Image 1 (cartoon, rainbow, N blue to C red):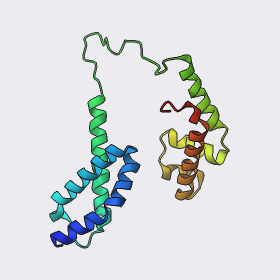
Image 2 (image 1 turned 90 degrees about the horizontal axis):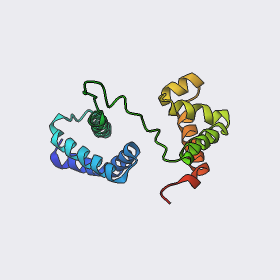
Image 3 (image 1 turned 135 degrees about the vertical axis):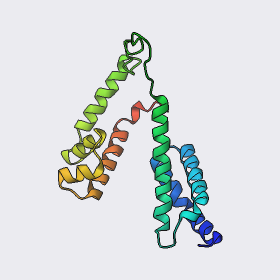
Image 4 (image 1 turned 60 degrees about the horizontal axis):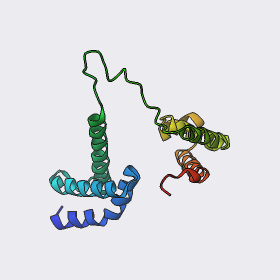
Amino acid sequence: MAITDFSERLLALQDNLKSFAYTLTANRDDAEDLLQDTTLKALDNQEKYYDNVNFKGWVFTIMRNIFINNYRRLVRNQTMVDQTEDLYHLNLPQESGFDTPEGSFSVKEITNAINSFSPEYRIPFSMHVAGYKYQEIADKMGLPLGTVKSRIFFARQRLQEHLKEYDINK
């Protein structure tokens, strides 16, 4: 593939890549960084692309892999290993994450809000929060994958609407 064809195809995908990057990162600045990293990596590896391969899939795979690698690096960097002789850091009292009793009340509110959903929304959403993948939820519930994704999406929207009064960014 000629350099100009490759660059033109890559430029034509920028909007789609930006949307996908935002889906992965949920942050505009991080999405911009991911888009830039992906574009550079695709250009650097242009000679590895073959004409008979799905170009869009190839570039999106690059983006997904960069995101996963960055996430793993971040987790690795934030992991603290207690190397003290008496495991001093592990024996420190752990913070609950709540500054006030009102913080724990909001957890109760979240739980009550989720429990108020009808089972068709509550079950897939709860499974997703528990770490199940979309396909696993679909298989366990005997539903199409798209149905599971939309129910989780709508449950998330309902939860945000129900808890908007707790928005700390007001």
